[in-house]
Image (spheres, rainbow, N blue to C red):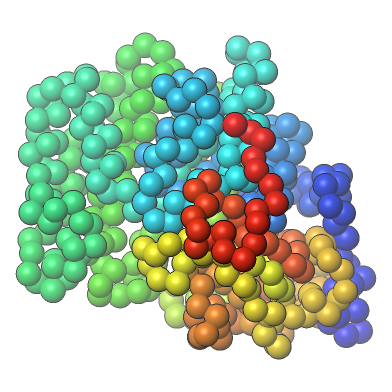
Length: 443
């Protein structure tokens, strides 16, 4: 049987707005503790919307109590306070105010806003003694704001400890708050390393865990967990920025190792508050698909998907998302404006092109446990990955890698034609040539 006919026979068509069409996926997920939901770009509406729909069902039907995302930890913590009914933000849109750095549209967009509004309403409706679902960041780009969070916490509970932390973190002052400049100058031997300072700060804070845990109430435990994670992030980010100008492989591995370390610490923290949690993860396919099945793995890179499979085996379910063509929100250069770009039809020899030939507009392809699909799709094909930058003029070099799909994911969701996610701040550049079709309701 040809690959096209094999996929067609195994695919579950997805109808617009019919969430029951995800029943086969929820059956595949079973009692998994971790569900990793990917995306083939950081700017596709269908990926964000359907990921949110699946997550709602995981929360309401399977008891998931944490959503961990490829976002800065302090900014996501502000959202977490909001969905728990804490903090100063009155509306869902206010809680997204921390996402200011490039690429802000990744989290300040209409689909995320809708989900955060839904999550707050869901939590508000729960009985007082029921665990509410939280929203947490996994990434490590927030070194400066994480230092500020550590200092803010210590200023309130131990001014002397805050003074010691401030002296240690002052090591970065000469770099003007520019983490990349710090990494570049230390890598070139032109600056001094702050490694000892950040490690010392983390060790001191970590050693006080039992002392601070004696403070009354869950809120105190949550506050210390957030602070400890911010100190851990500063330690890991310092190493990441020192490494990024020396080795792409090493810096990638450090970043994904940090994400998994954060997931593990989040699991431990929530377990201390009750039963072991179930956690859904939102991140790019390149982080969540098993790197061992891809050309990334052959370069010596690992990722979250690989590490979670090695740690949890079948208790982690990896779900990829693909598209053939459409539009995407992305930039042409790092730090540039959000643009609505046309996504070229997928290249011949890619899984996206194969899925297009199947002739279904949207479908779910379960891969786990199917020897027919594992054998029939065992050939390495290309897979597209669009990040926050999309350069169609160098499409093959910039956005494709080889993979063995049945080994990379447990299931794949394909949307043949997709459209750009809508940033909350829609600039004239983004608006050019097309009028947005929707605006969020969860405000």
